Image (cartoon, rainbow, N blue to C red; front, side):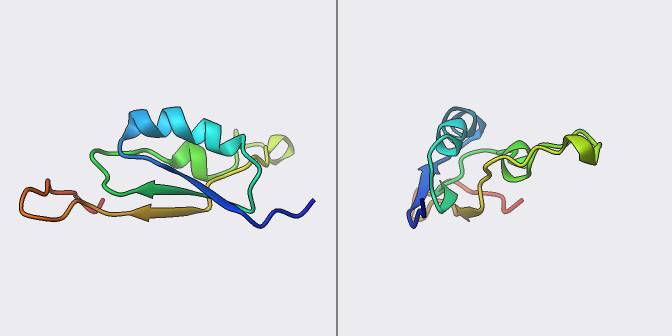
Length: 85
């Protein structure tokens, strides 16, 4: 079966990432993406954007992964700052 749909979830902080990314990865899609608009805190994506690997190539786990991320901050007169890191 060929899939042509891109599916994404909104992620504003680590809690949102931990709740929504596992559900995203269970969904069949041609491409999975995250929308962090706005990012409201640091988010560690290391476990979500790379296949699992414990250092031994014989046990590499080729898992579904996030392939695209859209990030941004708030705008307007009451926008809270977002650090680009």
